[in-house]
Image (cartoon, rainbow, N blue to C red; front, side, top):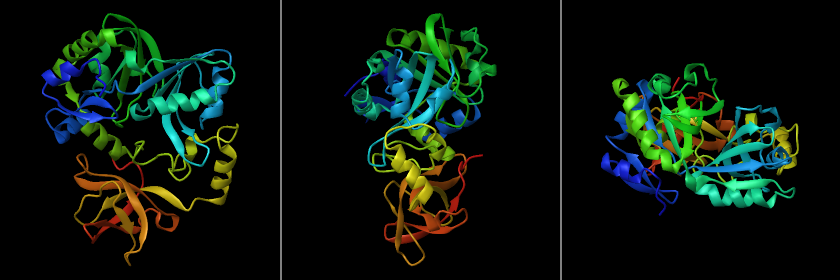
Length: 359
C-alpha cells in the first residue's frame, strides 16, 4: 500500500486509516457527521494527496488533450480550469478529470487515484505527436481546504487575494513561505474553498501553517468519509460508483462537458446517442419511507419490476434524510416520479428529485 507524505501526521491526530485506491488514507477523525458539519458551516482540511497529476507540455499538448477529452479545452486561458472526462472507445468513461491550463503549451491534468496508471497508459497511446508527459503524482501533495471560512482561514498565508478568485481558476505563488505552490479555487464539497498543490517535501510545513492560521476559525482535519457525504449532497459523480467504463457521459448527465464542436475518442457514437436519446439516466432521489439506499441496490417500480440500480446512497447529514443516485429507465427519470429501492427484499418508497440535493 502506498503512503502519502502526511500519513504519520494523520495517525498522530487519531485518524482512522483505511486502504483507499491503493493508498493508506484517513477516513475519519471525530466522526463523519461532525466533520461534514465543520465543512458546511466553517472550514476543514482534506488530505487528498492520493490524487494523480500529469504535466503535458509542447506544441501539441492542446491537440492531444482535445483528442482524448470530451470537453473543449481550446476555451481555456492561462489560469483557467475545466472539468472533463476521458471517453473510451465503447461508450463508457475511462475517468473524469480536471484540466489546468498553465500556459499555451503546458497543462496539468488531475485524475482519480484509482486510475492513475490506467489514465497515463490511455493518454500515452494517443500521444502520437511527441507531447512531453510527466507523471508527478508520487511527488505531489494536495490539500483541499473547504468551507465558507476557507478564504479567511488561508489569507494570511499568501499575497494572492483569495476572496476574489473565481471558481475554477488557479494561480501559482508563494504560500506559507513556500514558492511555486498552486492555489486552485476548486473542490468536491459544494461548500467553496481551495485546493493547494505542492511538493511532498513541504507537506508538514504547509499543513502546520494552515492549522495555525485557521485555529481561531475552528479549522479541523476531515477524512474521506465526510468527503463522500458532502459530494453526494451536491450530486457530484464519484468514479467507480456513479460513472465507470460502462456508463456513458450522456446517460450520466455529463452532456455539458461533452462538446461535439471537435472530434475526440468515440465522439461520433456519443453524438448519435445524444441525438437518439438515452435508454437510462442517472437521477437523484430522496427516500420517502425509512431506509438507506446503498451502492448496487436494485431500483424497482410499483410492481416490483427492476428499472435500475443505486450507484451511491447515504443518510445526508445536512438534510437529515436519506438520499441516493442511480440509473433508471428514462421513463422513470422525471422529477417527482415515485420509485422504490429494494432493501432486504422490501420495496422502500423514494422519489426522483433535481440535483443538487443540498441547496
